[in-house]
Each structure stands twice: as structure tokens, then as C-alpha cells.
Image (tube, rainbow over all chains, first blue to last red; front, side, top):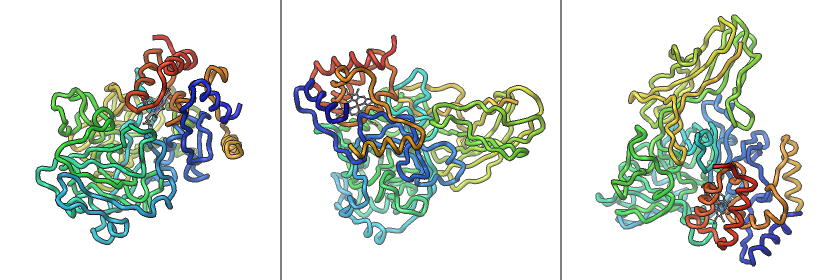
Length: 421
Length: 89
């Protein structure tokens, strides 16, 4: 049965009224491609499919051996399927700043943004709030991301603060509410994907409206022509193809910040921002928690490299037939937090009994991740249980047990790898 | 559907083939409602869920995301999902 008759079947049962989805890719939405590899941005760099419509794709972990995550391999995350996905769709692009707490509404084309404001560069981690959700136990619903719904990139753009100042922010303004008119709801009555950002964060000099990513225009799948960079905070705030910034005294109702993207109050050591209801049991997610990710093991004697994950990132893979007695093994990874800065990464090769400080081999400012490595000599047969644990300058560190929450956020459980000798 | 065929060929070259929902064409016809906003990938990756779990999902689609699905169809969808993508409490 082909898709046409299939949907006709749906129509018959439904008695009419079925709206056909607007397809923007050469693809049949009744086909299931989850967990396969698909060359979304480049034939050379197939990504891991979570969902094909809307597009949600995870980066294979081995790309993180590059300090800056290549744009072609950068993960992709959309909630609603009908977003503009061709550069020519943005010919009339304008960014508007307005709202009850904006003294003078302003709007800028992309060229005007670049010409009227000073341009800055910032390296920052962009991590989906739901990164690692798929590792929650008990399971929670939502995209079942494993380890790699994140990337580290060099962003170039103008300061959000400078653009807000051009509109004149009322001193009593509470927040900005941001959305993209290029990313409309899929059916009538559904809420536009919008985010509320408190004024104190929006005015932080590390928040940008970025039009360059790693020295190139942003890919459409990552927010062309311009996206917010809310450094230190999870990517839900980094509105892609941003067109509308409203400066407000009070927040309009919206599912995407009233209900979604919330954490149980008090369970995580992250900064809280005001809430409409100060007694609400769930508060908006904000900054990222301190975390580390093992990327690869290198055997310095045999020169072999292993990326210890299944192809589809489903799980960590045991490492076998890789290390022999006397070999020197280097384990390499990344570590990051919400912008306080990584202070140290420790590695254990005995399941957490003893820890050694790893060497930080590269960093680029406190919003970037650091790359680290640690070398040890294989001196006995059996299983080496390799773990890595990062701490930041606030003294925060990773957990050994999951702090379970209904949306599966902030999983920074220390990873364990079994290396068999 | 030439485009679809091309996609399948492309995937085969990556060593994967696409699958479709489980069950007979008659049983899964009602699932067409779920395609209005997104692909069936969400069903596969979120499975297995208990009947209660699927009820929660369908309710969220209708109440929060405004999926226009008549009540009898919602019931059929929950039955179908529990049968093919379900698990015990």
C-alpha cells in the first residue's frame, strides 16, 4: 500500500477533515527512520535521526574530537515542522523589537544589524535542554536524545543588549518574549514556539544575536539568518531565525514556557529566574549543569583510536581487544558548565576509588567547553572502569546518580566505560 | 512516488531501511491523524508505554497541541498503540 491509499484509508475511517502535512523534504512521513543515519546537511556527515518531521538529528559523538563542532555535523532540533528551510525564504528578513515595555519600536534588516551595531565573537556551548533524556530511568516521554544534542561553536553577532537599547527598555520591564515568524504553529490554535528571557539575562553582554557560526553563515537548520545566543543557558532560549522580540511587563500565556521546559523547584543547583507564580512547584530551566563527555580512547602503542559508543549512540560500548599489558592509553573528552568555567576534570580508572586530575588541552573562554585528556598505563589484566568527572569554579560537580525529573533534564551522571584487558 | 523511492535507495546505501507502523493496513489506518504535525518516528522512539502512558500522550496532542482528532478515533488510537507499542503497568 502506498502512502496515498494509506492516508485515504485514514480519511475513510476519520470521515473527512484530514489535513495533509506540508512536506518540505523528499520523504514520506509514514516511514519511520528513527535511529538510522541520514545525510541531512552533507552527504559526508550523516547524522543520527531522532525524527524526520520536524527534523531532529543528533551528532555522532566522534565529531567532538574537533574543538569546534563542524556546522555540517551540528545537531538539529525543531518542535514544529513547518519552519522555513531554504535560504531564499528569508529574503525579506527583519528583526523587530517592540512591546509594551519598549519605548520606541525598531526593526532591522540583517545588513542594518551588521552595520548599526558593534560586532562581537563568542565561543559558547549550545546544548538542548533534553540532551541525555533518553537515558532517564524510569523512561520519560519526549525526544529520546542520548549523549550528543550539543555542540561548541564560535558565534559572531551583535549584542542583544545593544539592540534592546536601541528600542529603549523601560526600567520596569520584566522580560523579553522571543519567537520566529518563520517557525509557525502546525495547526490553528497551537501556540507559537516562544521563549521568555528575564531582562537581567537578556542585558548580559554575553548574549548575542548571531549571524555567523564557525566562520560561516548559520545553516538554515541551525537558525539562519540569525539566532539568539543565550550563553550558559540551554538551547531552548537560543531562538532560531529570530524575528520578534517583545519587551514586556507581564508574560503572555504560552505553553512553551508556562508548562514545558520546567524543573522541579530546588532539585538542581542552577540559578532560578522569577516565575509568574512564586510558589509553583516547577520553575523554568536556565543554565546548564556541569558535565563531561568521554569522546575517545587512544592506544599510544598500537596507535588505534576507539569511540566507545554504538553507531546510533544508543549506548556506551564496552571496549574489548584494544588494550594490552604495558600499553599507554589516553582517554580524551570535553567538559562544560553554565558559564562559571571548568576548574578541573578528574579521571578514575578503577571505578571511582581513586581519581587523577586530567590535563586540560584546550579552552576558549568560560562559555566554551574544554577538551581534556588523561593517559594511564595498563598494568593488570581484567576490567578497567574508566570514569570522568568535571567540577566548575563554583565548586559544583557531576552526580553519580540521576536526579530524575519528569522532562528528563540536566542529566550529568558520571559516565562509566569498561575497558577489558 | 519517485522521491520516496529515491530516499529509500539513499538509506539502503547507508545500510538502513525504513520501516512502517506495525499492524494491518486496516488497524493502522486511524493513525493517519497523527501525521498532521509530525512523523511516526515519535511513536517508535517513545515506545513502549503503558496504556496510561499512551492515553497521556494522545491527551497532550489533543489538549495542548490542538490535534483535531474525534473522540472515537482517539480511543481507537490508544487501543492500537497499546496493542503494538505497549507494555504492562
